[in-house]
Image (tube, rainbow, N blue to C red; front, side):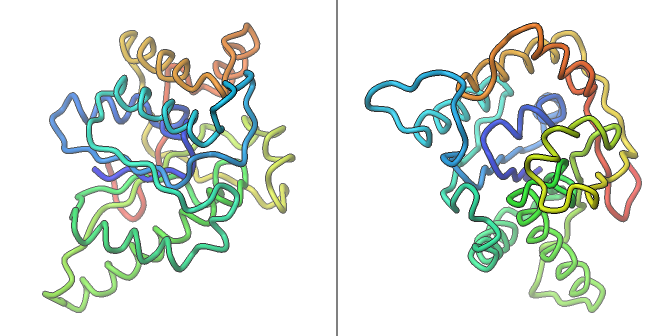
Length: 233
C-alpha cells in the first residue's frame, strides 16, 4: 500500500483508521507526504527557533508512529505550489511507483475533498500515472510493471467541509467529492489512536468542544470513506 498525501495531517483526518487496519493485516505500508505544510498557520505559538515546516514535519513523524507506519517520508514540493510542480511531482511519483510496485495507491479524491488546489494537483498527477499504467498494461508492455488499484479517500457528503471549501476552492460550486463505495467503521481502539494522531498535529488542531462537534458531524471520527476507482472492494 502506497499512501500519498499533500500535507501533514491529511493522513490522519481522512485515512488514519484505514492505515492502521492495513498495518494490522500485515500489508507493507509506505506513506508519502508531498509538502511540509509551511504555508499554513499554527493554532499555537511556535518556539523561537522553530519554523512551521520543521514543526509540522515532527508532527507528521509522531502521527505516523501512532498509526503503526514505519516506512514514511515527507518531501518538499512546496506547500501551496503543487499546481506549478506537476512535472516534477509526476517524475518523482512515477519513479517511486515503479520502484515500490504497490498493489494499491491511496490518495485524496479528485476534487481535493474541499477544492484545495494542492489536493487537486496531487490527485491529478496520480490519476495520470494510473491511466498511463493501465493503458500500457492493456498493451502487454512487459517493461512497465506498475499496475495498481487506485483508492480515493473521500467524505460522506458534499457539505461536511462547506466553510473550508468556500475559503480554499477556486470554484466552490464545482466541488463535488467522489461518492464512497466503501465505508470503514473504526473500532474503539482505532478511534482513540486516531485522536492521539490528531493531537500529534498540535500546530493544526486544538482539542476543544468545537473540534469534537465538527469532526463528529463530518463523520470522520468513527468512520472513514473511500472510493475504489474502476474496481470493487
